[in-house]
Structures are given as C-alpha cells and as structure tokens.
Image (cartoon, each protein chain N blue to C red):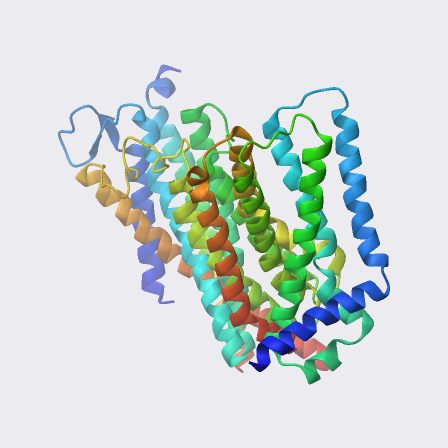
Length: 43
Length: 237
Length: 223
C-alpha cells in the first residue's frame, strides 16, 4: 500500500499512458480504414 | 498527412506526457528532468502543459473553420464546407476538453469547478456559439443552402473568437491568470515565467497538440468526403 | 444618394406592413406587459437587491428582442414577398432598412420597459441618468445589429422560431453582461466617465456586427 502512496504520480502516468495509447491505436486503425475506403473509391 | 509525421507526433506527445507527469518538481532542480517548485501551484502546475495547448488548438480549429467558410462563399466548392464543418466539430471537442481541464484545475486551485470567472464564462459562451452552429446546420436540409448559411455563421462566430479568448478575460478582473489586476501580469505563458526546461516541454506540447489536431482534422475531412460520396451514390440509385 | 432613399423606403415599408395587420406588434406589446407584470408580482413587498433588478431589466429587454426582431425576415418569407423584394431592391438597402427598423423597434420597447421599471419598481433608483439612457440606446443598437443578420440567416432555415434565440443568445451574451454592468453603475450613481469602458464595448460590438453583416448579407439574401 505504501508503494502506491509514495509513487502516486507514476500510477497516474501509467493510467494516462494507457488511455493515450488506446487513443493512438484508434487513430491509426481509423486512418487505415479510411485509406482503404479512399482507394476503393478511386477504382 | 505523411505517415512518418503521424508516428513522429505519437512519439513526441508520448514523451510530452511522460515529461509532464513524471518529471519531479523539486525546490532546486539539479538535472534537466526536474521542474522547479512553483509556490501556490506546486504539482498542479503540470496542467499547464495540457490545458493551454488544447485551448490553443481550439483557436486554430475555429479560425480554420472561419477561413474555409470564407473560401466556400467565394468558390462555392462543397469540399470547403466539409473542411469548415470538420474544423468546427473538432474545435468544439477541443473546447469541451479545454473547459473540462480548466474546471478540474479550478477545483484544485480556486475551490470549486465553476466560478463564473470571466475566462470560464467566455469559454462557456464559445461552447454555446459553436453548439448553435451545429443546431443551425441540422435545421437546413438542402446541401448548398446549408453550406452557405453555415459559412456565414462560421464567419460571425469566428469574428467573436479573438474577443472571447484574448480580449474579454484580460479586461475583466477574475481568478484566471492574466485577468485584470493579476499581480503576475499577463500570466505565466505570456510573461515567460516558467523555468527553461519546463518552457521547452510546454512549447513542445503546443507544437505536438497542433500537429495532432491536424491529423484528427485530416481524418475527419476524409471521413466526411467518403460519407458524402456514398450518400451521392445511394441517391442516384 | 440612391441607397439612402431606397433604405428609407424599406424602413417605411416595414412600418407599414407591420401596422397594417397589427397582431404582431400587439403580441409583442402584450409580451412586454405580461413579463413586467410577472416581475412586479413576484417582487411584491420584497425589496430585491438592485443588482438583481438590473439583471431582470435586461432579461425582459432581451426576450422582447427575441420575440420581435426576427419578424422582419421571417415574415417576409411567410408572406412570400421575399423573392419580389430581392428582384426590386439591392441587397444593401434591404439590410439597412431592416436594420434601422429593428433598431427603432427594440429602442421603443426598451424605453417602455425601462420607464416602467423606473416608475413601478420603487427600489430601482437610477442615480446617473446619462449612463442609464446611453446604455439603453447603445444596448438597443447592439441587439438590433446582431439580431438582424441572424434573423436573415434563420429565415432560410426550417425551425425558424426556436432557432433564433438559440443562435442569438450566445452572441448577445457579452452585450447583455456589459449592459447589466453599465445599468448597475447607473444605479450606483457612478460618474459618466466610469462607464466609458462599457460604452466602448457596446459601440465596438455594434460596429463589428454591422461591418460583418454588410460583408456577409449578400450571400445570405441571395440564395
């Protein structure tokens, strides 16, 4: 318990990074999907 | 947008997040990865690395919405209307984020989430103005008329943005840094009150969020173009 | 100058068409009377703070503006005369004529409301009359300037009635706050110079709104 009290900032950091990586993953996946659709339209 | 730029901004902002959150704040910084303690703000000062760049991106988004509105009125190419809506909707999202991060900071610094401080009031009005933009759009069915009237409104709304973000909070007295009567002058950003390494992280965040905004904007515009294309195909059948 | 005479004729036309069938103006007047009565009734024997009274004064003026100022364009569409007007008169004259009409309308309404406030609410004591009446004048100008272009925009949309306050309120909010502040100064007995900042804001708001409207009105009017 004391570990979590002393290193609270790092807990925050891990949580924020988890959310951030999730968001980045979503962005890249969306980007790929859109690119695929754009190519389909071009044909 | 080039792929390398997307990867670069991802790595860039990851670094900013780590620096903003994990760099310790000590009374006398010994290394480049330590921020100085700001009395009165202490750890809460970290928020400045996120809250201000998001607000800046909001201004960029709304300005772009107005510019594309103007271009649409001159060229009547519907693509510019798509660009105008995309910027406006991202601007609204960023505005909400700026308001929320501000309110959280307010809770810790001023005691409550909402104080009707002039800057809080002005960002709230901005939310209403751009919310009304989308209400207007939903009330018009014909594509060209909707585009024309939205462009006109985006110009009117865009003209008020500088007043609400840069003028109003500075001429009225309030709690937010930079308001009238603030002993620290125009606030930590304009008066460069942050330590050099913190300043660097701040400016890096500013650039990073702007590039991230452009990435999100390009996705949104492309999505809207595809949607419109599909809609046109299904209509002609 | 042609444009001044054409604008004047549009202004007169607005008056004539509204006075011909007076129901709209009567409804507006009834709205003002009703709202004032509600406020007087709810005050009753209490003495509300003068700041609250300054706020409610402008609430009444604002909602009267919301009821009345969109009619110039919406009624045009409803009567079907919009197309004819577009053919006969150039856009700028239409805008100026309707703007001046709106200004006259809201000025008369706000004067009625302000006078009623001073007469019927004993706690509402105006100490600096110059500030008070100047605020009414400039506030009406600001209300009219923003409302006219927004009315032109929503006249072409579907849900005109409810759309107008939704668009107008955020844009008019800084104007309202400034007017309320200036009214508070007037009731406190401040000197005229102390309200200069408020007047500057009101004037610049009106000027910016009219300038933007001029640039943009053509696109709204010519569909």
